[in-house]
Length: 111
Image 1 (spheres, rainbow, N blue to C red):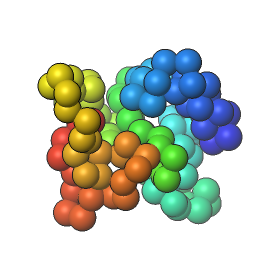
Image 2 (tube, rainbow, N blue to C red):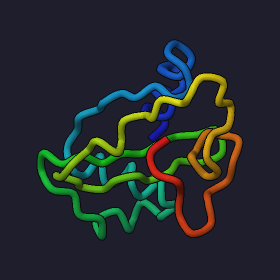
Image 3 (cartoon, helix red, strand yellow):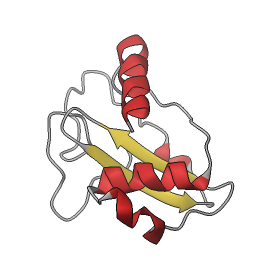
């Protein structure tokens, strides 16, 4: 978890807070990262199921990680960052921009 958070900080420093990157690993490592993102104790990570060749997406912010997908094998298009209209400074509430808390009732879709 420390290594992933360190990598995330380095990518964000070089490419911006909304940078997206891919990490590939074995299931138990992915499940331990999911457990951490959910605030679960590591002893419980085996309760999480992740299929081989699936995608798990976690967005790390300054406040906390947001679990976006677990073991997904379907359409990943919603994970792509949205382009904001010119002059649009606002980020939807709960989008995980680091300045907002988790949105009550869910979010507004992919950031």
